Amino acid sequence: MSAPTTTTRLVRLWRALTTPRSLRGRASARRRQSGVAILVVVTTLMFLTIVVTELAYGARVRFLVAAHQAERTQAQWLARTGLNFYRLVLVANHELENNPQIKNMAENFGMPIDNLWQMVPMLNTGLLRMLMGNGGDATDLSEETLESLRTTGKIAETDQAEIEEEQATSRFADRDWLSFDGDFMAEVKDHESRINVNAFANEGAVTVIQESPTGQLLAAVMGGEENETWLRQRNLDKWELIGNLKDWVDQDNMRAGGMGGYEDNLYNTLDPPYLTKNAPFDSVDEIRVVSGWEGAVFDRFKTHLTVFGDPAGKVNINTIDDGMMMGLIRACVVPMPVDAQIMRTLEMMAQNDPFLTYLQDGKKLASALTAAGMPADEACITNKVTKTSQTFTITSTGLVGESSATITAVLDFSGSSSEGKLVYWRMD
Image (cartoon, helix red, strand yellow):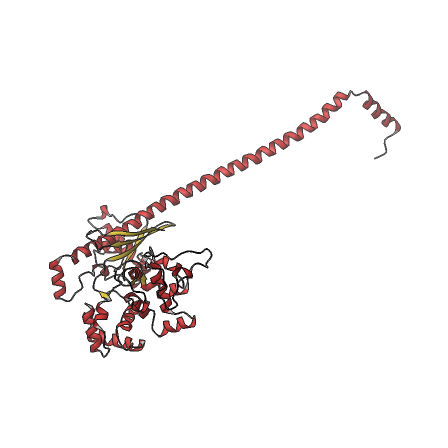
């Protein structure tokens, strides 16, 4: 393009000089207004997008929270259902135990009268649906279903279709009370199968821990070759550990262990410091705050400890596990046998008495041990065992969708109430 001529430049200059200034400002203003309008439109669209997105997200969150809350509520009530099922079993167990005719008949046949709850160690919707579908017969279920019931509480798919078909042809098909969303699983355990550490508070003026009946049994359970090695490797004295448990619940301020001194000295230097409770434990987890029981020690021995059960610390000879039985033998047989000898003796006693009648009471156990070549102190055994369980923990879990709720309740049937006294309740 050629450069503008002199004439062209003069024309442009003339137009600029003769055009009113108001017209030039108006054109510039129009350009500025159009830019502001575009900015307003873009800003408005962005704001509306944010508002709509936020409203949609909030609505979805509220919907999911409501759905989860509904499932959570259903799961809680299913957990209560499992709890009430087991409470019914325990009430029936309590009534049978207190029925003199049934009790005399059971004793004549050498049968424990309070073992109804042991016949139903776990209960769940899968088991109930299976019984309903099979007419109460669980003998023809596959191994896959039995294993699934033990682990998840549900029936394997291989048997589910057959059970549903049988339910459809049942005369009660139109009233299937188990047709609901979700499942529950419940189990029951007694506390008399473990040592009640709150029994330390009921032992009166025992100041030396080695003289405590509860301490003697607990020391025997914490004994044995494997446990002794484990404690020795960590430079732990089991009698000091047991003494700290007693100091937590007894009424005095002096330590019962061999180190002596004031009980509170164990906790004054902690951050933050605290004092010994001098009152019974409220839960098993509270044992963790006792000196020496904070971590690995508690984890190793907690399965043998409880804060409920027999107030004298006695254990039920019919429900204790092998570890507790070995501890009882260590505590009441002199000289103390080694673990291998105890195991051989128990195996021989079971072979000679397949019905395990020696577990009916402490005297028979002491006689059986003595007859097997392991002389037992009858008074020691009878003072440490009982034949019945009165306190139980029911753990029931409800499952609905992705939500679950677990109820842990402790019922005490030692009183006059046939329904049991609720002494502990927790929902997770």
